[in-house]
Length: 298
Image (cartoon, rainbow, N blue to C red; front, side, top):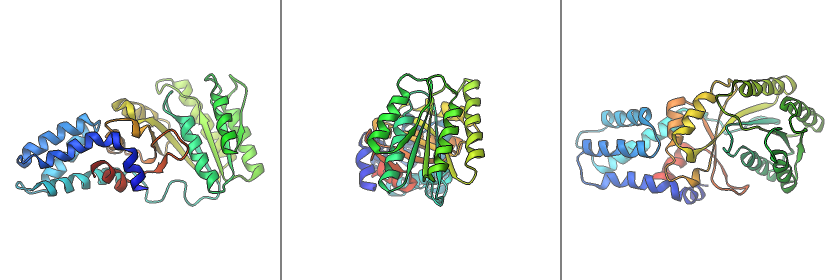
């Protein structure tokens, strides 16, 4: 898994390779830390989290610290930030029946991410139901139907313009009737500033709680990591949707930066659960702070 992640992050690693090279510049510690701060901000780590990292390295190393010590300190701080927001248990572990609710802005990759989760579960022999709760976007339903046919899963759809909550209700009923293992709800993309659409998410979540009270549940905010600090803005607003349990970062292989993962964990404390590292169904990895940092800086 580490080798696959390292290969897929080749573009993202380009910036972090430059960060790694700072420790070989021969400069004194303070000069290195100044350059490091600038590089982290350029990598979308963000000012608040960058200040925290630099402060911790400064207090945790000697003034004459060498390059190896400083690089080790950087890795330690990145892993602490990322691990601090991530539960110790694997995603979706410990429940025979599980629900994923995929939420986020338009264009973030919710439908593809839902398909990746479905593909993994199907490959493991689990019964999967997809719910096309995006009843507004043109061709959204058809896109999920195509994925369901490709993966051999059931899909529950509704009419265009229908109440998404009604689709979720029908999907929950089918889930119970079939005693399925996994229900994945693909919701409509929405602006984080649209209160009505955010309230709609709350309604969908209430139905899932009421109809499937014993099922494990993840409400995943799907974020396009290539949009950088805008992902932080989206995440901050979507956190007002109380049911969020973590993030699914998409297109991490398509950005030359990638520090937004650190910013999300450091500024918002929102756990990163999954990484999308390509367009194919198998291009999905469970997030590991240890492997992510090593892949970036190795």
